Image (cartoon, rainbow, N blue to C red; front, side):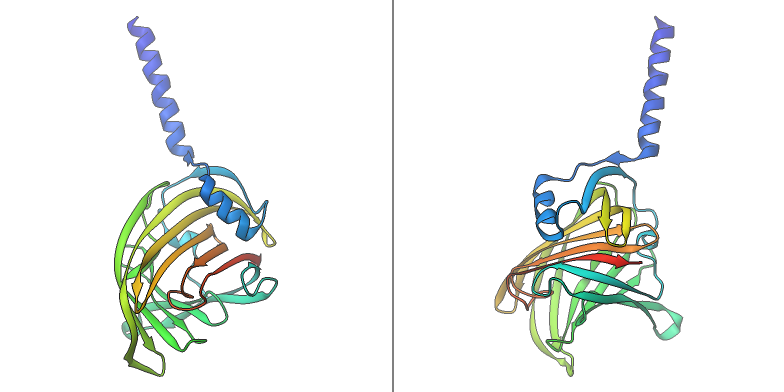
Length: 253
């Protein structure tokens, strides 16, 4: 009997170790699957794959100068091809920061924290002539997130004119949840990748308007962002493009 129990416990430990090594498989929640299919099209997001904790965010979003082409598959500019990319900028003291083009007029400014997180602290919209600053910064790729983990945050938002940064146009606050949904097989024109999916939901009041936004970002190791969706009730990053949804897929690496 003792031998049987010992063998059984050994098998359980071996099985548990195998599961931990391989990662947990998290099926895509039905609501997310419906939203993603509606904006990216059927067949883009496939089966769920084993997920691992985010040990090094730069593996999923390499911090290097790079231009990539994306096809807009949903939203006002559907059918367009956009060349977007990441550009390095140097701060005083040799510190590195990065400018990420999310659209031809929308740029996010990000950096890597001493803890290894990649955060986005400000966004410029040249079409509207404003800069949006959030305190604390928006999570982009936090280090150490576990598959299925959700982190809540509250931030203050300031919207200022680009031609006169001291002139504040609007201010307000947002509350949000950033979730590591899982890892999925993603097929886009640039290829098929195992991509981690992060969902961000936020809402609040900025200036006179109430805003409620949902975004999905797919990151593939060594490649970067292979697909993205931004749903907006009021704003292109908080104040513009009312009731719009934009979906983009990577065309070339």
